[in-house]
Image 1 (cartoon, helix red, strand yellow):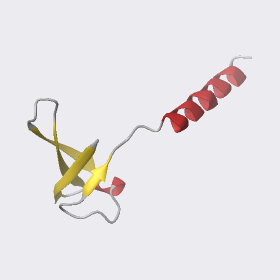
Image 2 (cartoon, one colour):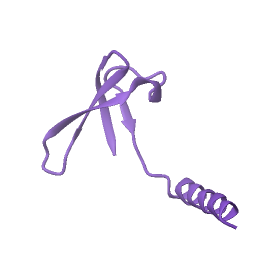
Image 3 (cartoon, helix red, strand yellow):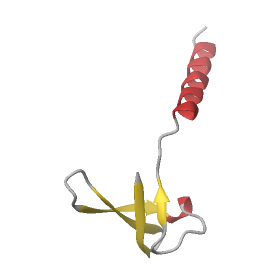
Length: 68
């Protein structure tokens, strides 16, 4: 998914994207997540399945060690 930085307001970036109906939607994202980004920049947001799997395995291992 791609979003466009519309503007910055305080500690947030207001980004826009088109929903499935083609309507513009505006969402606030913490500015700290967008280092070096400027108004008008296109930002890519994607799901990282490999990292998700690693985190799930790590959590499972932690839970297993707690409940032994």
